Image 1 (cartoon, rainbow, N blue to C red):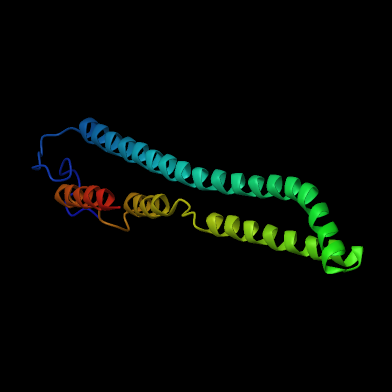
Image 2: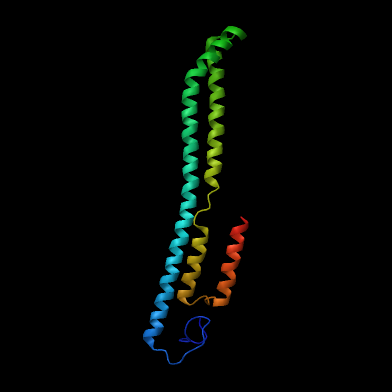
Length: 162
């Protein structure tokens, strides 16, 4: 909770002459800024996840196209080759070719599933939203302006290193 309610903007010198209207206006401005920032963060995270999901869907599609075309054109050739050169029965030759293509399909699916699991979700949005709700309920003290500036500088330098 705030030690001195009505002390003005966070980090600003207290002004006992401020009216209730000014205090409400400041609170509404701060709240609307927080909501805008939360929405912006959620959009950025959702865009990053959508990109990863789109890439994985493309990989599934590529696996399907490759399996379809190659299976039709190449499997007949390999099956006949195994039957003629190795001397296998035709059914055994085509069964071996089918098993090989199933293995290739499983590898493509495994790569796509691994890429889907790498997505992050809206992790940072969930953390900041829960902090905001705690501040609004009075369970958490809002950070001072100096703390916010330091945190923003750390995030900027941290994202530049990534």
